[in-house]
Length: 115
Image (cartoon, rainbow, N blue to C red; front, side, top):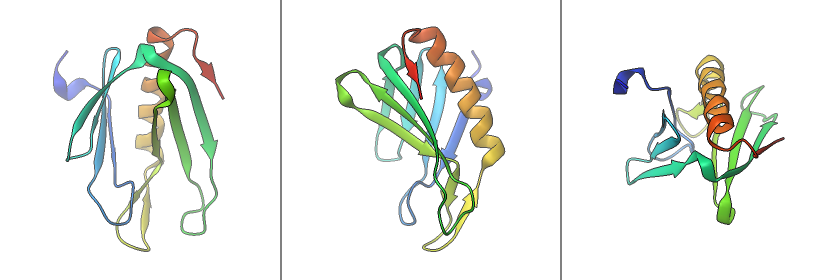
């Protein structure tokens, strides 16, 4: 598949730090934190947890967390930090990526729990 056609999502997970990008490539979630690139095998997903987390700085924050075999987690939210007190909502981009991720997890790990 053309690399440009792969579903992607990017965010600044912390007020100070580098962006983290997530890319789906078949049964693999590629997590690039600038410092390192990790390939997460989606067949190892045991649980997908989606939560709504109201925060004072952003009226709506959604979080998706994948729990993998062995207890490791991968988590990302619908906001991206743009400074110490400013967060940008990315609802449309987040929703599109989560839809693609849920389909990929469903194919790779049909026994995963969804909460």
